[in-house]
Image 1 (cartoon, one colour):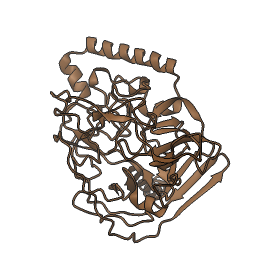
Image 2 (tube, one colour):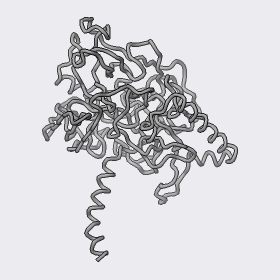
Image 3 (cartoon, helix red, strand yellow):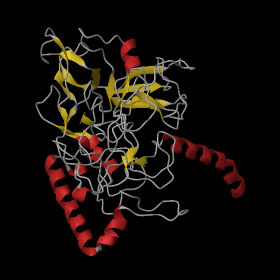
Image 4 (cartoon, helix red, strand yellow):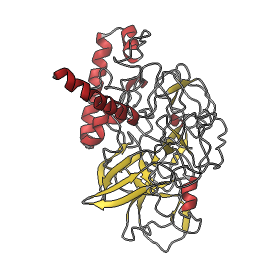
Length: 427
């Protein structure tokens, strides 16, 4: 009887496993390129073979967005030389706060940033990393790596999921984004706050003020990269870490947003803006993100032989950008001691020595004082490990090498990681 029951349950279990695997983000690749290229987006020549389906409704205190993941505009041709994946229907369902509130501190993005009004997710990171010191993530719109991105700055994951990495040109045309009008609503962030594109009021408190293109406050760093195990060359936008937040240099804060009145919120709201400058799509949340957009447990590098968004097979870091020194609102979840931490949005359990799994951090809503105390505690753990282990053992701890056929279920390269210290990836 037990055997018969197991046989009947096996197809259900296998189906569940397939669903879980399909929901995982693409695995990364590594490269040695250190110079920015030229991005040549694919023209929008392909009409979707399936009609776009999206519903948006308020249920209780949640905004519920469901879609089939098919865009409502023409796309580039997929598969293509840089992206071998084909667009296919999805079952997206996002529940986010209908009345969002700002949190005590910002939270670095650890999953999809948000979702557009047409039901396509904003997932701007790329699973492409430098083959050396962990944490040097390639900027997907820099042109350094050919990712087969179309004119809407989107492409397709191996699961068939079409997603935006930058300004969704096709969508912006369909909602009539115009230079002399405030941006229409483009979508919602995972924390429930609205997303707009480029154009807003010059005076955020005055809806009669001039319409202007709002500017990001992120700038290219000056000088050269560290070199050694890290990439060399000048900071030119090839990598996420080539940029830093410079307060007051633009119109927007470190979340690429501001408090403002908008046509949809005449009494004012916090709102995100996609910009023409990097990071294009925001990378930090002002409020508390819905778990539907989070991906965990966080990890770092996956086992060798994993798959990237391009469909290739190579070991690399996970998709989230490095924890570094560029976040103006630093906290426990963006500390990167000895440059050995990289962020990961999926890829297995947290690495050895990490006292709180990265995927739990957004849900804890740590205060600044808690962040500080946990930083100190993590530092004590790091220091203790370095005293106990030899330099060779520390190297193996952060950069293990698995024999072929071991499967890679143990600690993975770069897994001693935190979510992004800053989170910007963009143009």
